[in-house]
Image (cartoon, rainbow, N blue to C red):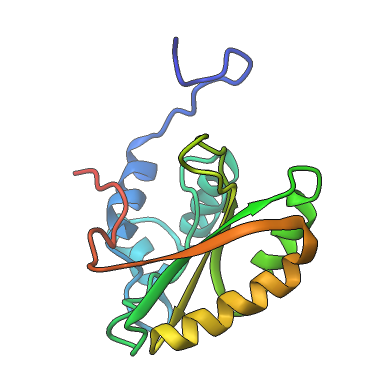
Length: 168
């Protein structure tokens, strides 16, 4: 079975779209007008580069354009994925609230893998110490209230990947 939906046609990229992906996949240039620099590299007007990138975002070809900080370089040496067993009837509303906390960098719902893994809500927190991460986890636990049956923190021990897929 194909990963593509039968209802949605495949997105076709032309040579310019592909060149834009290659030009941006390692990050935007750190200049005052990064899209102008990329457009010049690809050989198109800046407005066309921005419009094509927006179209690729809208179609899902590009999932997002955002900053990817090196947490260790900025002093966040304790990085913990908090995991929670939350009432399924309330998880969507509570997950949105947890994801909106200023110290949560990403938050998502995953299916449980019973009987070994009861957790269905994940929220990443960072800090300069484990004590700081545990204090943040305590705020999440308080927000979840009686909808939370249990939780834990899984700390990162090394950086395994800090980049997305690359095409040549």
